[in-house]
Structure formats: C-alpha cells, structure tokens
Amino acid sequence: MAAWWETGVFYGVRFIWALVGLVLAHISVNVLNDYFDYKSKIDLNTERTPFSGGSGVLPARLLRPEDVYKLGLGALFAAFGIGLYLTIVSGPLLLPLIFAGGAAIYFYTTHFARWRVGELVAGLGLGSLPVLGSYFVQTGYFSLSVVIGALAPGFLTANLLLLNEFPDLKADRAGGRGHLVIALGRRRASYVYVALLLATYLTILGGIAGRLLPLPTLLGFLTLPLALRAARGALVNYDRTPELIPALAANVQTVLGTDLLLALGYLLARALSG
Image 1 (cartoon, rainbow, N blue to C red):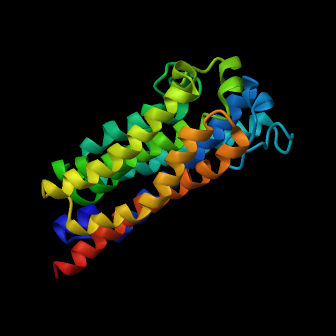
Image 2 (image 1 turned 90 degrees about the horizontal axis):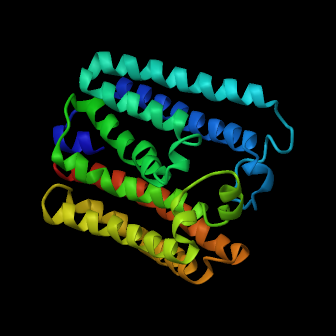
Image 3 (image 1 turned 30 degrees about the horizontal axis):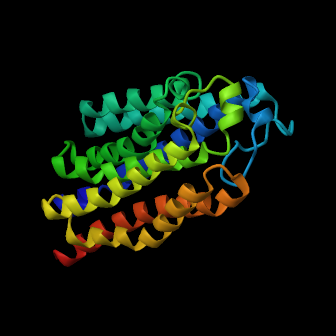
C-alpha cells in the first residue's frame, strides 16, 4: 500500500507471490520454533496461555518431531524459492533481505532467542523487513518514507513477542533462553513494553509531521484504547499470568489492528490523491 500511494502502480502478481512467500516464512518460523522448543524441553514445562507457550502439538504427541521439522524446513525452502523469483523480477537489492529473513527464521530459537536479541530479530524479521521487501517488490527501490513506515510494524511485532514471554519466563530460563524478560525481570520488562508502544504511535506522528507518511495513516491511532489496555495490564499484572491474559489479547489486537489500519491509511491516501 505504501508503494501504491507513492507511485500509483500496483503489480498484482508480485503482490500475491510476496504474500504467499511471507505466509510460508511465518509458517516456517513458528513450526521450527515449536520443534526446537520441544527438543529443548521448554514446551514441556511452559505455562501455556491462548497466546503463548507454543502450539502444544508436540507435547501432546499429535505429530512426530521429525515430521514437524521437515514441514518447517520445507516451508522455509519454498519461501526462499519465491524470494529468489521476486529478486529476479524486482532487483538484486531484495536478496540481502531474503537471506536475513532466512537466517532469522532458522536460527531464531537456537541462537537469537538465547543471545538477548530475539525481540529485535522478531521485530525486524516479521515486522519491518516484510514491509521493506514488499515495497521493493513493487517499486525496485527503497525510500526513506517506507523505512519510517516500517518502524511501527517492527516495534509492534517485537512487542508481540515481548509480552508473550512474560508467562514463559521460568520455562525459557530453564531451557537456556536469554530474552529481555529474563534479563530484566518482568517488572522492568513491562516498562520496555510500554516504551515500545509509545514509540509506535510517536513514529506514526513523526512520519506524518515530516511528510513521509500520508495523513490518513492517523487511522493507526484507532487502536490506542487497545494499546492502553495492554499497557495497563502489563504494568499491573506482569507477575500474574491469569490476570495478564486480557493484556495478551489486547496486545495481539493492537498489533494486527494497527498494521491493518496503517495499510488502509495508505490506501485511502491513494484514493484521495485521485
């Protein structure tokens, strides 16, 4: 949508292939995370909620671990193949994003989540980089406006992971992870969560003020009540998982809703521009 707003050109076939590739990448990272968390016994000890703690498929022995690993790897290779095709049709500068995304997917659970950069890698890999890559597929170049536009999805995705780590702290620590909630403790990590929420909305405002985002992207602020509910829950119930669950739900709604409304804001700006 950002590319269409800027250029007035929309390549439908490229959009579909990029969408399929990103869905496959998302499948891969979640399936491989389930596999590696099962192998490290994290998912055998975690306090599962509707929003965290893994899918529960492997602990329930619904599938064989080796089959789950093959599925994750197959989705990754399929996404990589689509990425190579899109590199050919749109330009070689897409290739570094493809390799960065592949590394983030395969090594997230085994390395990045243990090196205290899991939230950063998730924010980039499932937030900012997909926006940048999708824009490049449509335009063949990057711009400052899309870099600014990609910040909010990055902050939101990092926050999605961050709050979901609160219930998993004990199991993750026992399994060798080293994320921010373990490093800071739940109370101080809740402050980081709120700071990232604040950065999300300030980024949108700053982009509009700097004329790098169109005015209709203010639609993203419609999720502010949800964000406040999530922030309040994180600050008050950071150490009480049952009471934290409504905040986890509001967090998911904030992430998905803001991303969707930002896309709609670009679409509206394009329509208003004639």
